[in-house]
Amino acid sequence: MGRLGTTEIILILVVALLIFGPKKLPELARSVGESIRGFKDAMKGGLGEDIAEVKKELQEVKDSVTK
Image 1 (cartoon, rainbow, N blue to C red):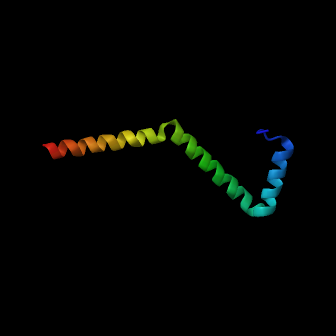
Image 2: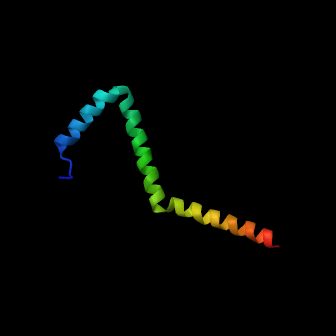
């Protein structure tokens, strides 16, 4: 339990095709792929860079206020 076999994957794809139709399915797959890519980038440190940048800006504001 927990692993998807070939039969299960095919069944999921058929159901998705029936629900979303052939025109929407590529758009849906692209959207899911972009979401996964964004999540992976965030986990690799994309957010860490943003936090470091915010800390730097806060330090600059703090330094300008104390002068």
